[in-house]
Length: 485
Image (cartoon, rainbow, N blue to C red; front, side):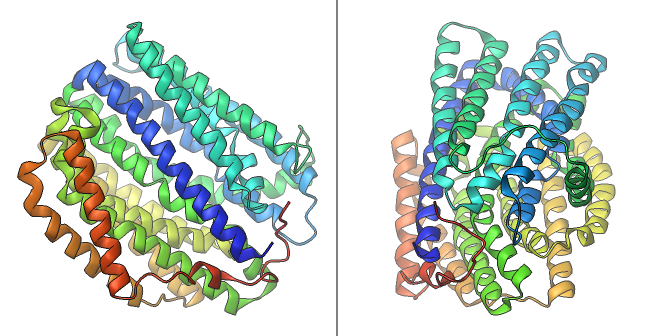
């Protein structure tokens, strides 16, 4: 099958799975917020933020490392993946273990401390999926990832509904989260059997190479933590559960949105690595430009629509008690735009294995963001946290753009970006007047659909969308290291 056809299929599957997964995920959040209220959701947000600090460190960038190792010419796929999985298991346990112990020393209530134990287990299960994700991305079978994600999110939504009906509280909801993540892990294992026999192996040369490639990513991840999770942690220590809940509800929307650019990155990174390592610069630049175009086409209407419809979206997702989160979401949408573009530029650096050059910018951002979070949160509460997040993401974007230019002199063509910007502004201007009439969930959904239609029509009329774009990514000889079983 042609590579371009595979890319189109995988892109459609990823989009469809993200849509369904997002619907189920938002349904679970809607149930939790309405059940727990702002203060209860504040405790839930604190649990997730605290446990995720260790989970993010445990990530070690192994999905990217997997793509780099198994997409090289002559790679022994089964042997490499078995070593990666063993390394993943050992490192995740060692890094995640301190979380439920350290939380005992923090000034949180018993419910939060117990919740961190369960959340840590849930994150541990998620981290084990990384090796399988890299495998499916290489073989362009992201439909396997989609099945795991959708089934897990569906179980989560159903389980949360049942836990609420049984009045199991925060602990019950987190138990359901553990079960949903376990299902995802088991589905990944089941599907991987067709492509590779993955076991537990310790081959020191491979472990050494894994550590060599992951330590720059680990360094950036640790520095990332300072401005990725400092907001909720500092907010939880300085402000009330109610304020944490309002901020956490808006941030949940952001968490859902920022997973989207990594969808395209996961599909295109193996192809970019193959082109770069083989010296096919013309093909590399073509895929790179398409990656940029897809990112821009997706992020600009999201940011514009999110800013305009912030309050109605928060009412739709979290309920009227969280309507005050709309202002926070409006600010955080600026950070969403920066995250999308940073994903594009940081994956560019990963594709030619120069991610170490980003460390200095991560360090600068971390050192400046941490005091800024403290000062702004003390003075402006959750709005201060939101603006500090915007600063940190914008600073990281500026650094990654500069490094990519200095390293490879890559500069994208901006014609499509300009068309997308005009279309997004037009959409926002046409949607704005209907805001006073958006009082129900149905009206809000219709407004979102209307905005999407306006954007697509404007893009088509200005020549921004072309059916042949995806097919132009490559030809069937573009990336010979990629198989299509």
